[in-house]
Image 1 (cartoon, rainbow, N blue to C red):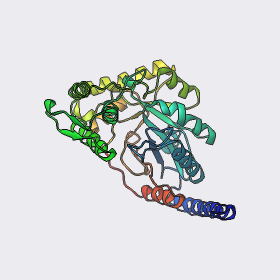
Image 2: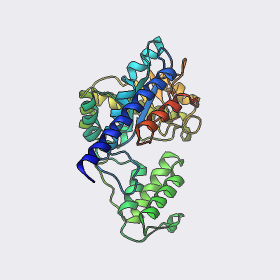
Image 3: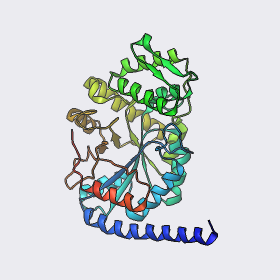
Image 4: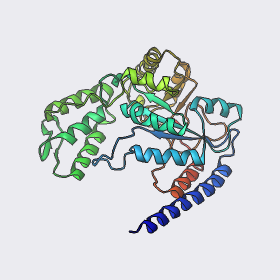
Length: 339
């Protein structure tokens, strides 16, 4: 391809992006006029340094950079706490949006925050405190043992599970999905016992650097980001006793406040599906424990008179400017589910 052709293609791509931005802004302004209506909240978990062959759709630093460029071009981005206050007061700007992260992965501080700073944008990071400083989430323990297993199959028959073939990337991906599906809704302690047995049977050594350290949590806070509660051990709240749920929510809040030396006013429900992962009694718990608002993982945008303790979140997966804007516009018309 000639240099002239390359330059022409780049110019055409830039022109298409500009058209998409103008059209997207117009559509989003109609659907998100401000006041009390149309708050879009983006949700992320990780920002990888480079693509993961096992999960090629996971966001890497280049995807995140592209997302932020589009988000900044299409939306008025606010800190989530500010957006909650302004929505209650009826003073949201048009095309209001917030950026959030769940769980507390180390790449949030190492990779995501510098990119956020580059664009002058803010995010709220919801951190499960039981995994910081060398811990690992149960699902990541499963992912990493399957990723690193040297054999052509993983035989877990002695644990009442299956024989999982691992001769290809697709088979490893399928094994991970099956194992996580079997374990996800077990009670918290039973799930961790089963995960530990699987790790032992596989002869695996789990990595201890996937999650943030306390110093990285402070780094986010000191860098102008907000820190939110996400429990201690990320249980499915609907699967544990209400007293245990209270201890998880309160304990995570307290631990984070000790780390950053500031209040933690916002909460994200683990897994976050209304009615499945948390129920109305958990919403009431969050209110009672002194939070100012909370977010779910239900799709949609916060309508007027939205429940500030069940704000929906969504992130488009599209990699073209026009489809990204169209997906966000469609999300603004989606009525979010509540517990």
